[in-house]
Image 1: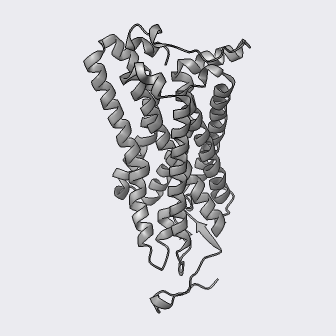
Image 2 (image 1 turned 60 degrees about the vertical axis):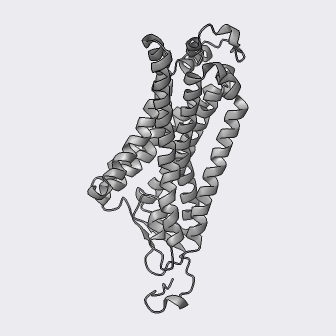
Amino acid sequence: MEFFNPATNNKNITFVRPPYFLITGLSGISNIKHYYVFLFIVYIVSVIGNSFVMAVIVLDHNLRTPKYIAVFNMAFVDLLGNTALVPKLLDIFLFNRPYIRYNDCMTYLFFCYTCLSMQSFNLAALAYDRLMAISYPLHYQVKVTTTFMLCLIGFLWLFIILAVLIAVGLITRLSFCQSVVINSYFCDHGQIYRLSCNDHFPNYVVSCLYPILIFWLPLAFILFSYVYIVFTLANVATVREGLRALKTCIGHLLLVAIYFIPLLIVFTLMEKIQPNARIINLSMTSVFPPMLNPIIYVLQTQEIKDSVKRLDLNKPIASNMCFTISNITSPFNYFRII
């Protein structure tokens, strides 16, 4: 395909949509095949772990609560995200098929960005669940219902899908007159729009707004929720009650740390990290949390461990228990049932 030189006459450039892009982010790195083996193992563990968590939640009626709706969605997003990213990544680099068709690249971009974005918003939804459960335990069952959580998750999906579709739509209006080489491990929005030869200012605006909406906003809400939780416990609870309440947050805090801290490090030190090291670090932050999330929830959440024991013993699983305000002698006794 012939590419036009934008230097000749910017006003007369014909719209050019390349038949393919060339992804080269992980090419030329020594001993990189060992990393591909690592990614394959991570993917297999992620599929098994997240499928296991979803199966337990589906089979155990006791886990069909607002909190575990968000946990189920997290496992689904992790499974979908790694399935969208890792097999294609291995196909491109391990089997030396770096050429990806234009439409396939846009689809690849859409699913990767949607799942990576949903991970951060899902952590914010779990933070809201913990905030209401600890700070407003008497109102928790009224305000945080199954219907509410389903609507919240549905709204987040809709918001993210629309945001990513806007980014993809803006890519489709660009003309590519020179290079089609993407120096990343997938079809990265930022790498693609910088290759264009016509006005890509709207794409630049989206690339600036997107991290704020998808990364910084959920992180700010999560930090605010835990500051509020600590403030509530410091003013109401005893030390023992406060520790028991915070114990219910350990799993969520670990997930937040695993997801956000590596990205914060990469974003903070981006200019000081070599390009190859930055690409590897970003790829690890994309695939590693989905593998660890189900492991953390199985090990840290007593309800799931109890559910696994019930399923393992083939005992009939009781229907969801209904608790009333009269059963709660103290607001902090509610932590025994969440």
